[in-house]
Length: 338
Image (cartoon, helix red, strand yellow):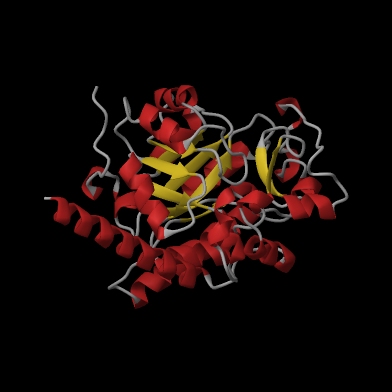
């Protein structure tokens, strides 16, 4: 198969990914992403998302995930009724498909009940999760850090891929986005998202030119009013840049990117961190080393573009304006060469 054309027609994508204000999906961020942020993102015209494990409840209480899904669904329905000319984008729920996630089966049932339109899976590709998504009319996107994992995910029934390249927040991959996207695009013609320092509209367009369909944006949304993040975390995102990001496996057992100042503040030397292997990762009870995640703040390398804390809608407005300006510039450049 020949390589896929860099700029793909939107009608080649499923409706959940093609009817967006700009080609962007907000990444699900542990602790940070909740209903307030998701609703704001969707109403602004991009896919909002959250990890299912963010919705926690005390023992004996009804599942908080169901409470969140009801709230998000009703809020987006209300928005659509009052804004028929600019309907909300669909939302996504991230499922951690790791053997230690004891909530997975229950959460799959809840998401199927509420007909979640987009399912994002991480840390394992399992056919039954994709089947659950399909059972309610949803699509399944799996995040991958290399071509081998990409092929396995599609073989197990995923509808699309999220290429997590170097520079991404959270559990980032080690490969250049150029290498990762071009290898996947030699054989895969389905939905492909790119994660890794996507912080501007120009970067979204660049991802498309490389061969991806949409940009996958996380860290800039930490510095929004709706994000469930410590105010100091938001201000650190604003003040920091790419040089302030440290890559380490110490905190969760999988290589991830973190803010150096938060590591220093926790009493650790960011230049002399130890390491941990994947066997130390556990999502039992809803998180992987929850205390470490709260004390050590994750971030991607693209935060140099983040200059202030704003409402999520204002950030999407900024991304959209930058995307349109960049696209117009490319069109003008192409016209000048013809």
